[in-house]
Length: 124
Image (cartoon, rainbow, N blue to C red; front, side):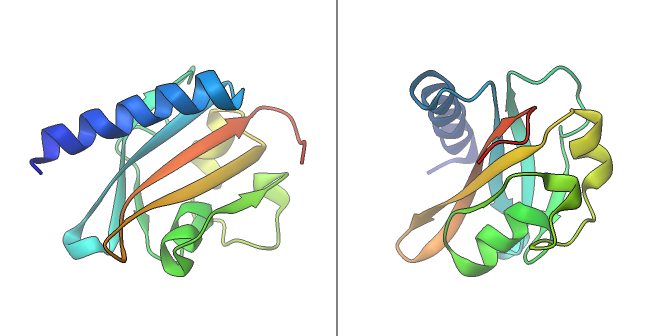
């Protein structure tokens, strides 16, 4: 699929996540660089552009952990969590996010994208 179709799919999935999942903030993007890096390209419900274009390396932060393990990962307080590395605290904090969920989109055994849902409160 061309990247524009994939990006449209990510946008649609984020809209469904916000509508059906009850999360006020959703964002995500496609993996680039041979599947080693996520580029956050789609934002929904954000109040800043701090996450726009952010590159997330496999293994780093919550999304990078979701990529590395090919499974959903969540934290109830992003900036104080001991379960993740903290390379992206600045952009996440600028958006005021606390509880965050990262879900990898796996196609034919490979992570192709990551979708995030987030709250500005620290809730499980």
